[in-house]
Image (tube, rainbow, N blue to C red; front, side):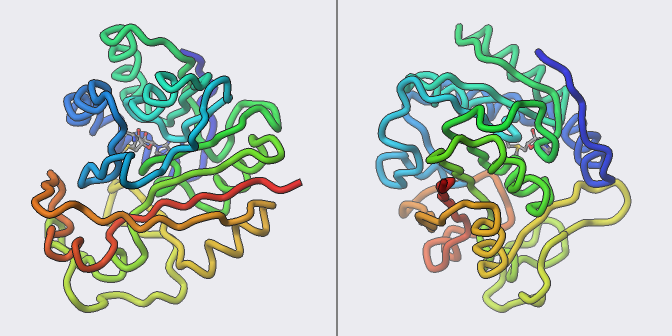
Length: 259
Ligand SMILES: C[S@@+](CC[C@H](N)C(=O)[O-])C[C@H]1O[C@@H](n2cnc3c(N)ncnc32)[C@H](O)[C@@H]1O
């Protein structure tokens, strides 16, 4: 594992400590995702065949996963022929990823750093991807320009996040699922944090996200709103199936570097 531990911003330090604490809890679910022959996405495991998140042809493409955690997305990319690399802010999560590489016999570089300051040369990758990694735990005004820098012209940025609708409807109380009314303002949404040393998340409204992507030379190609199948289950308490069948609780952005 390469170590470049970058990132002194308060949320980067808080989130590093939080994810080092959470790593053990995520090892089992990570192993189950490594074992998936076909990718599934988000908290309801929507099949790749339905969601169409990944580019059709990954063979020989250089990919970087920003906030790779246990590394299963990078493993799926590698199995489809990509030259994968994973970057994460948590040594604990990367230790799990390394163990899973050994268990599944699939090695790719793992880098310990913040996605807001990725230790790679400009234009090193054809694909930058994040599933609930940098996409929600980094400040978008820091990690999206950095992802754009890492991409070659024509390269693609794909990231999965909680939907804007969900973020407006989830109460502050832990464990309470999204309601059917808006519980916080839309305008100005950006940084979300709990008390003390709780991790810090970031979520932008759609207009702000589109302007940010375009300002970084990234043309928006798609916004996929994931809908769980009837009968789908999740281990997360913050949304019910009834809610998520009516309104999107997760969204996947796709943007391409122009020029
Ligand atoms: C929910 S996991 C998602 C990763 C992967 N999809 C998984 O479930 O294993 C969130 C990951 O984002 C990472 N993360 C948080 N802040 C980060 C940062 N500044 N740079 C890179 N990774 C970060 C955490 O360490 C954690 O491993």
